[in-house]
Length: 341
Image (cartoon, rainbow, N blue to C red; front, side):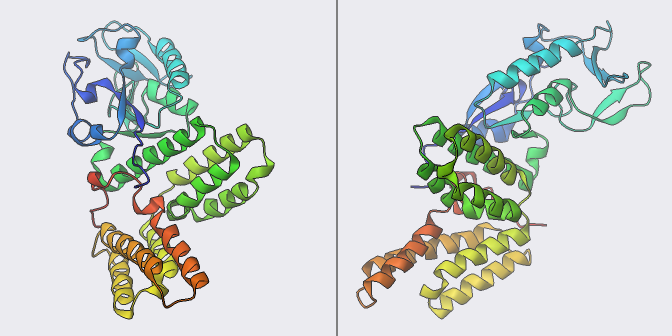
């Protein structure tokens, strides 16, 4: 069973990106990746803050304007200040979307944009393009742990893979904590995610390990809250090529003794090729998964090795095979096929 089998992240999304005609001009901005690829694996929660605060479609355009108290959301022609209702909606939505695993915002929107939104002087001159949409700013401040992106940045292969990895990890954690879990269940969850955490945040890997080691000594609610915060923060860190190489060698070390010299050399060479940016991460991962499964099968059928040794080696192979790092989301998404820059 793959780690994400049966898991469907809940992801909030700007409604226009799914094809809803809610844009200022009455149109939409349907995004192909979201609707044709990712939609098969997630449950969307559409949100359009402009519609929810009572604006129609089509409607007067909005913009951000500078003020001593921060950017204000204002209608361009009639000069109506919508900052307060939009901020209040964000607070309400942050609470109501407590069970979502991520959010895809509409890029370049004065309400939903995450990056580079123009902030104008009242005269309309001297735009500062370092602004953030009012709704997006308030919601992300209330939910700092939430995986967020806009559809423009999701065209970048690295950012796309990172976002999808985070929403599936969040969904697996949410599924665990929604049940009648015990500290041992959290330990098992963490064990499956160790290599994935290590690929993102080596320091957090050690800190979270210490937290889990004392799992049985803490109140369940406090443990869930602290682990969840640390786990999601760790996966928000960038998984670099160097960190991936470190994890690949960790996994190779666990099964390498059971590979013949040719197979071990092949896997080592492929890892080096990935490190040199000649092949995609999918290549060493495919070999690693193949050898981990093959090694475990070999252990099970071995008759010439002492039973205790066979068991110990089988545990190592199973440990590697069960790591979420090898399949952090459905393989059908094919998000690790790009060669790193």
